[in-house]
Length: 108
Image 1 (cartoon, rainbow, N blue to C red):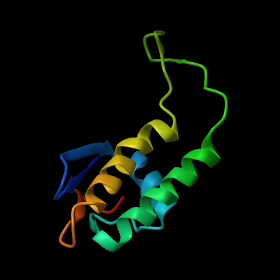
Image 2 (image 1 turned 90 degrees about the horizontal axis):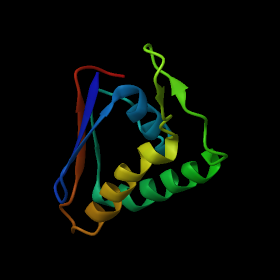
Image 3 (image 1 turned 180 degrees about the vertical axis):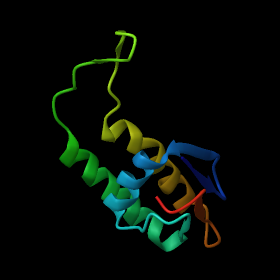
């Protein structure tokens, strides 16, 4: 399942629900089918994600093999977090009516 994050100030971000769940839980948000960040929440949420990225840092993981035996890189938490951090920070500077909403087919 995909989750779509849409900002009043930037473009949209699409990500798989498992990745979105990890990011939203790091911020303390519920993983409901629909949700929002208010302008007042965004800067704090971005900082929480930055802290979670620092906690998750470590040596880069080894590539893994896919079903065909081909080596593919592992995508780590920080790589998934940076687009949302950027969206949160840029939208936070957008003024009092700035907002970010997310939508998925169901709770995740």
